[in-house]
Amino acid sequence: MTIIVRLDVQLALRKMKSKELAKAIGITEQNLSLLRSGKVKGVRFETLDKICATLDCQPGDILEFSSPKSENEREEDR
Image (cartoon, rainbow, N blue to C red):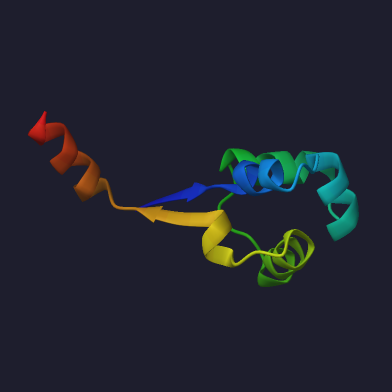
């Protein structure tokens, strides 16, 4: 199971810096950086709710599931 974090895409679409988002949702820039890089094991629904409200987006705009099986199938097709 692989979850891809697409927070950078949403920030770019809204021309917002991660520092601004961190301040708006009340978390540290370091924690937001860890989330953006996908180096966290989880995210609280409360935090996800604040991100979505601030960026006016849906959770699916930020998080994407990528099946390792489908990645392997793509490599076999090459």
